Amino acid sequence: MPQKNMIKFECSECRNVNYHSRKNIRALKERLQIKKHCKHCKKHTLHKETK
Image (cartoon, rainbow, N blue to C red):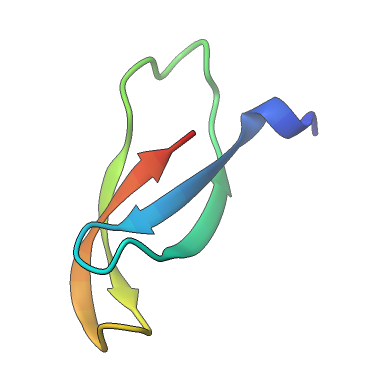
């Protein structure tokens, strides 16, 4: 897989990058937002896609 398909998810509260994933850039133009568990905050928080 090319590196440009990789995306990072950042916690909206503590700003740590906790998750990495792949995304089809042609099909999904907007940035993803997912509720995931943050090991630094020790709770479920909203994680937003970063560049």
